[in-house]
Image 1: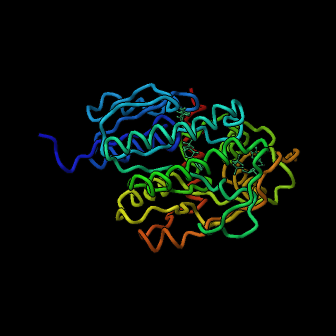
Image 2: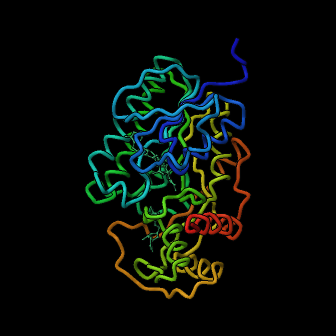
Image 3: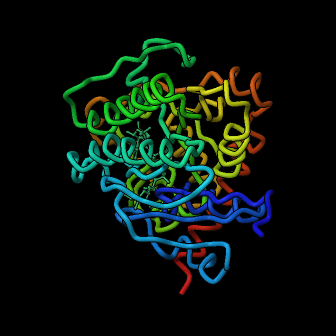
Length: 317
Ligand code: NAD
Ligand code: UDP
């Protein structure tokens, strides 16, 4: 007989940065985990330490195609997340968000599973309200270079809420703000990994624009705790709910912090700002605090220490 506490949980995008940490956490909590990934940006290296665990299974599959499995819960994370990767094949990015959501929602409906969506702060676009609460509808360019990702994720949210209204599905929608930590892809162009890799290699630190744009950086362990708590809220709480660290830093401050912490001799260089790059971004996390008592515990300095140690270990032979 199956242990009733042990749930069968599907994680799409499970071989990616966040997905691999989530698989680890769910296994540690005593569940059976099915990791589904097409390995576009994810890698087997991220999950190699889990292979061999009898409660873990990895399946190569693209979520734009239907999937027939039997599980109790679904975390839908499949989607490239860094601008370089999601702009590489923008049509596939939109398909992954939209067809992927339809397929996973269809699966959840058939098997009556609870389903979580990894949405994003990008649904707020270049925000005119600061910090961003969940009831802000955003300021998004529908036809720009970031639109495949932003609008794909917005449409996925729409689908989640329509499946809820039409089919009474149990849904949980998290709007994730910039998250960093070990297993970020070293070449995916995101700011934290870029700056650390550049600093460790003594290469110039590339600041896009004047570096006065802001971001709020959440350490991965804090975020994963938020995922699990949100998934376990009562069925009448659906979100959308912001998950991120409200500590706000300019990109220049981040660069200076990384240089100081790595002891690097790298100099700052200024490059042009990519189009539609949001000027400021900071989550209002009052709803997460109130609904499931969540707030980040790891400050930027402590999180960067762990992340720098990870990137140093990659460069060792
Ligand atoms: P990631 O690129 O490391 O992981 C995404 C994973 O999805 C990869 O393993 C990739 O191979 C897989 N994937 C992509 N397309 C797929 C498809 N069609 N079928 C199956 N698998 C597919 O990125 P991440 O940072 O781990 O992001 C995970 C999720 O969280 C994404 O949905 C992303 O939009 C969301 N998110 C992340 C952040 C962040 O700061 N990391 C912020 C906001 C939202
Ligand atoms: N950025 C930068 N230098 C880099 C990479 C990114 O100045 O080498 C800037 C980028 O223009 C943006 C911020 O850092 O303003 C965060 O970029 P990232 O790609 O990490 O995430 P997003 O723009 O999706 O928040």
